Length: 240
Ligand code: C5P
Image 1 (cartoon, helix red, strand yellow):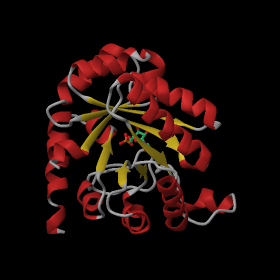
Image 2 (image 1 turned 120 degrees about the vertical axis):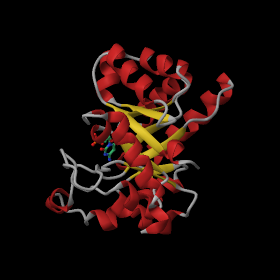
Image 3 (image 1 turned 30 degrees about the vertical axis):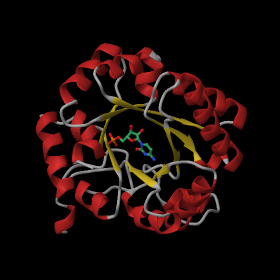
Image 4 (image 1 turned 30 degrees about the horizontal axis):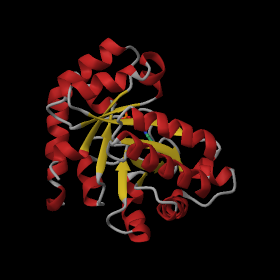
């Protein structure tokens, strides 16, 4: 897979016009854009259809966390929109994750579209072990591979995790189980609200399949130059 196919640009801004401007400017750098709660709750489902018209794959990251019936309903709706990838929380449990994948398969067949990828959110990259320990859980090093194994058993296609856990997820779940990695920060850049961060090169060297990058590109003084540098850094993985 080329670096462009692995890079997912997170467009976290309100308003359809702004999202489309960013997507149009960045589409030569990434095959996929990620739309989350900020853009979706201001622009609605039409943002997905507008992006598809630009030939972009859409990762609709609404991080579903509800009972199986509700999650299945939301997954059916997102499948009808033609999204490429979507997220549910692994902490929603095995029945919920299995219901999500089943709903995606059935609805895709009904509509004659490709079955969307469903990846499970493990532990947000804005968290570290301080929070997990406070609520009586083991640290991310133990918890993330356990959640990933449960996601795989339930039939999900992969998980969202930090670069620091990619290798242990691959060991627990196999190489074909996708790792989608946010918290990417080029060396020398700020962390913003992210805690478990890594450079593009490090993430790739750990086996990250997709890298999700938002502010290091969208808030850069020169977003095109920032995207180019990230793509180049991803390709340096073999040399580390
Ligand atoms: O701007 P930044 O590069 O930090 O954006 C990261 C994106 O990845 C955000 O859209 C955020 O919602 C998402 N994300 C994350 N951590 C997760 C799952 C998704 O940061 N565990």
